[in-house]
Image 1 (cartoon, rainbow, N blue to C red):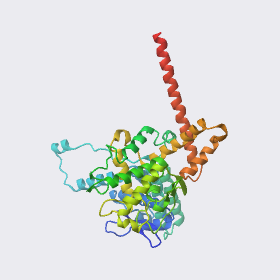
Image 2 (cartoon, rainbow, N blue to C red):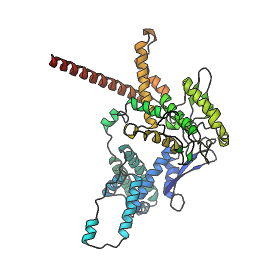
Image 3 (cartoon, rainbow, N blue to C red):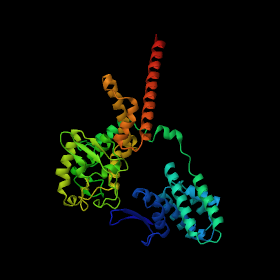
Image 4 (tube, rainbow, N blue to C red):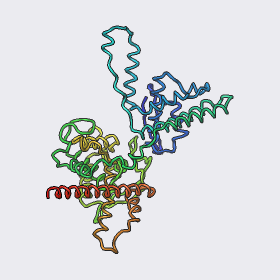
Amino acid sequence: MKITHIIMETGERLPMLLLDDGVPDFWATLFVGKRLRNQAQNSIERGLNAVRHLRGWEEYHERDLSQEFRDGNFLSEIDVLSITEHCAYEAEDFQKWAAKKKQESNRPRTASVAGLLALKIEKPLKTVQFDTQYNRISTIAKYLKFLAETASRVRPDKRESKNEIERMYKDLLSKRPKPNSSRNSRGRYAHIPATAYRRFKELASPDHVDNPFRKGKSAERGEARTAGEVRKRNHLLVEIAYELGLRGGEILGLWVEDIQFGPKPTLSVVRRHNHPLDPRKKQAVAKTQERTLRLSRELASALNHYILNERAKHPFANRHPILFVVAQAPWNGRPLSVKSFGEVFESIAQVDPDNLGDISPHGLRHDRACRFVDDLRLFNQTAKKKDRIPEEEFGQLLKDYFGWKDLKSAAVYLKRRTKERLDEGFRQFQRGAFDQGDQGDEE
């Protein structure tokens, strides 16, 4: 099974789950049309990935849940536990394991000492993060409730079936992993120091000796090519993420017209969901609110050079307005994809995996938010009293800059940054007290 994306005449992108013979999966397609159609493309794709993962469970256990629901047989407590446990496994790793088990089951079994000695202890299956498991279970619970309600609609015992379906739905939701409150309070990126982000940005510089995009294998399709244009483009991708804190979808969704040059250059984030001028099946879009941000002269100059000297030399780039394009034949001039964008950041991180391996595009956005708070507080320390910004206005400034819908995200960063500063101050105090104690002992 695989997920494909079709583009409607209106520009709407619609993900579809296809069976091995290329035919759309009936129940998954119906579920999308009835329950997910109004959601964003990425949200629908995540939902279909959860359904596809459930299909792996059905195939391994030789079950057909749609038929079972038509017969009035709903999930037992053991089934619920089995499915929720299945949601913790990495899909690819489970598929390999299931295929191996199927092959082993087809082999003739012979009992012998040599056979027993040849047995190996299996490695545990790789697991996903708790939030991924949580979201999978949530989606699968909604899907199975929809499937059960639709498949059992013609049954005479509707009232009893309705109660069983509701029981099954609540059982699935109750088995979702509990959020780790200590992890959430520290933040996903709390362990990455600011120096790591700065080094990441420096490695993306076109002239850096350790820049991974050199002649030879590039991050795009793995074909040999000169990497001068790729270096400049990838440097801009990282600079925009570091300097402005834009999300990956916002960067990939930029149009040439979104960059305004002049004495005060700016970059605009514009929401263009399902726009017909974007030829990508899997469209990259802005999730946040529209806004206009000031550009540094250095970044504006680099963008101007890229548009006039790099992007313009690809004829296909004139057929669409997307800013960042592929540099390598045969796809040169096409809009850069989400996959290629992720590979750029992965390639830089692998230069120093021990220190940079956990850095992601969203991590750079997190770092920018922290630096934004620090910049505001530093400004207040050096500004005249009448020019200082009241701290209660920090949240609104963060919200407007990063495009958040409300002040909740801003409050998280303000609280977290205050705690980090207090922790650092306490560590410095401890070091000072320890040093004074050592001096006293020497005296």
